Length: 133
Image: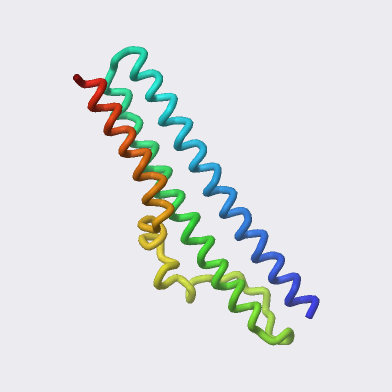
């Protein structure tokens, strides 16, 4: 039973790291977008806002990747949780769990990702419209 608990702890540590990475990416996304908004407003330069689209999209892709990985490891945690203690092999392979909502595309299009990055992109569009008047 001790081996099973240790394996579950290892998986939980990975899940926490993926969630932390996702949180940091969202913070950096907002920080960069706000910084580029400020530069664009200061110089009345619409190009700065256009540049802001690139990091937001890249962070969205990375955040989707980390969310997909987190979902896979949550599925692995659930699988290991149901194993008998003598069946624990400390495998961290999630390839067989990479279907359905655990895919990268499903993570990119999840409600939380769409709401967060969609609102950042809408804000970029609105700022672009106001600056290019």
